[in-house]
Amino acid sequence: MSFTDSNKPVPSELRTDEFKLRPITVDDAALDYEAVMDTRVSLRLWEQSTWPEDHFTVGDNRQDLAEMESRHNAGRAFSYTVLSLDDSECLGCVYVFPHDATFLAKSTVVAVGDDDWTATDAVVYFWVRSSGMESGMDARLLEALRAWFRDEWQMSNVVFVVSKQFEHQVELLRATDMAVRFELTEPEKSGSFEVFG
Image 1 (cartoon, one colour):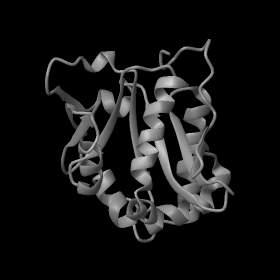
Image 2: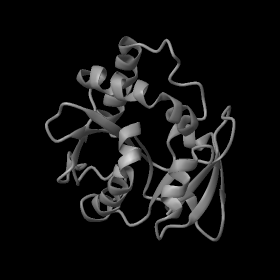
Image 3: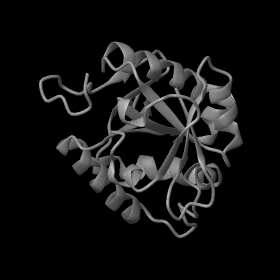
Image 4: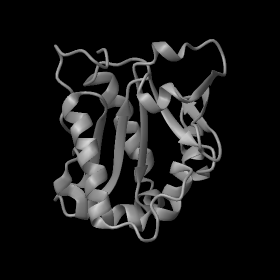
């Protein structure tokens, strides 16, 4: 499926026996905020910034989620919350972008081999809260995402972006059968990212 194929609906849910994904909305602000602040040390490595600041609030988070919800509804990019099956806890987030998203178009992308960035179907970022990293849930999420994009999204060329500073996630991706296909540098970020596919 092309990222912008209006004839095929974007999958609205992924469910396993451990967690589920659905589009994030402003109504998720409190649960998402709890997960963000619980994971803020790792997220600063993941984001390569000072976000979230210690003074970040639920209101700030609500504004961020409003933008994500708007992009999702417009089909520009897709953001999913990862929830416990009973909806009581946010376990993380997944973000799906086209290869030519505005921030990616401003980035420097260098192929490691012969891969063509413009042939990428989707560019995926994800994180899970600290407890999920400790239990290996992030590996199970990654496995579920790969199958979801292949089977439900019908995309064959999906890549996953990880911050080189976030060693835990780098090791997670390196433990799969994927390889680094691109190096990505975003403007005003303190380091670079590896792109696995």
